Structures are given as structure tokens and as C-alpha cells.
Image (tube, rainbow, N blue to C red; front, side, top):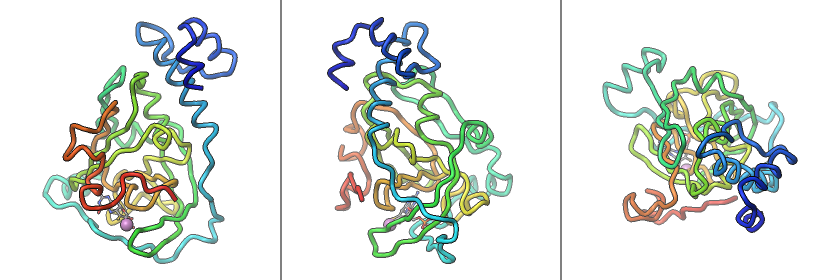
Length: 240
Ligand SMILES: Nc1nc2c(c(=O)[nH]1)N[C@H]1C(S)=C(S)[C@@H](COP(=O)(O)O)O[C@H]1N2
Ligand SMILES: [Mo]
């Protein structure tokens, strides 16, 4: 797919896109050709990706542990929590056509997906829950990612950071989740919005999201290993 896209002229790619339904809403303008190329390449990638197993609602765990941070420190978080997270914003910037800040209401207006999946923690436990949220791919589509995008870097309110490659960022089950088991995500599980990466171990599913940066390199953060956990011996890629 990559070779095909690289070899195609802009117009050719656009026609391919038209024909196979790969044309994103932002195909016009200066960045339009790039968007179409990237989106077509990523759609090809995305459609070939296997889904993580999904379960019936009856399999949902009655006890889902909450570990590490169970409530971010600081007055700002507590005040916003009391206000229903009305001042929380998710910044999305980097290699995008239109950097944006999304409120919780903005995310809820985008298409949603609900899935019952198993969370597997490296500490030796697993639990099943139902998650509802907006696919990360829909948010990336809304801001228009550059053809040079290679990673999505994420930071949290409790100062964790990590990154995903585009295959996992655009995976249909990768969500910015605001719902758990039919209700708003509880504080201990990452309110107001957490990541769900169902193709990887639990530690990649960051709670308390704050910012997303689309990038072509993760070298500029920390020791350049792509994840804070990687500096403490956890592998950056934790596929299951
Ligand atoms: N921001 C943030 N994200 C995080 C963590 C955390 O402490 N802070 N812990 C990670 C680990 S190791 C796991 S197993 C899960 C735990 O999610 P839970 O508390 O909802 O079970 O969140 C992951 N994401
Ligand atoms: Mo974990």
C-alpha cells in the first residue's frame, strides 16, 4: 500500500480515494492531497488490522481494580471534577492541519463506539469492562493529520506520557473513552477521558488524558524511548 501511494500522483491518489471510498472530508486546499494520501494509506492499514476479542455484557467484571494513580493531585483537577469536568480540554496539535482543543461535549458529539474488552495488567491481573468513547481515528480525522505523521504522543494530568504508532492510533478499537459500564468513567479509572488501546497491555491505556501531539519522531521527549514506562524497563510496544 505504501509503495502504491508513494508512486501515485496527487490526482491519481485522489481518484483512487474516490473509487475506494478513502477520501477524507478535508481533501481540498493546500494540504488536501497530503490528507488524501495519508488517509488512504492509513485506511488500508486499518482495514487489515485484526480486532481484539470483544465479550458479552454478561462477562463484565464486578470488581475492576484501580491502580497507580486513582485521583490526580492538585486543586485544579478537584475543582474541575466538582464542575463535571466542564473546563477540561484535550489539546490535539503537532503535525495536523488544524490544531484544536476538544471539550468533553465536543468529543461526545463525534461518532462513538462501545466495546466490552479485557484489560490485561503487567502486574498479573485482568478484568473485563464495557468502554464507550470516540475512536482516536475520528479525532485525528477531525484535525487532519499530515502525511509525515508516524506516532501519536499522549500526555496525562498526572504527568504520564506514552506514544502509539499510527497502526494502533488508527485501530478501530482504540478509543478516547468517556464511559465505563454505561456510566461516566469514574475518577479512579481515568475521568474524564482515558485511552483504551485494546491491542496492547493495560499500561498503554493512559488515564486522565490531557494532550495529544501528532509527530514524526518521539526523540524529543525524555530519553527518546517513546514512553515514560520504557525508561523504567517496560517495553514501548506491549502487544497482546
Ligand atoms: N494516567 C495514568 N494512566 C495509567 C496509569 C496511571 O497510573 N496513570 N496506570 C496504568 C496501568 S499500569 C494500568 S494496569 C491501567 C489501570 O487502569 P485502572 O486503574 O482503570 O484499572 O492504567 C494505566 N494507565
Ligand atoms: Mo498495569
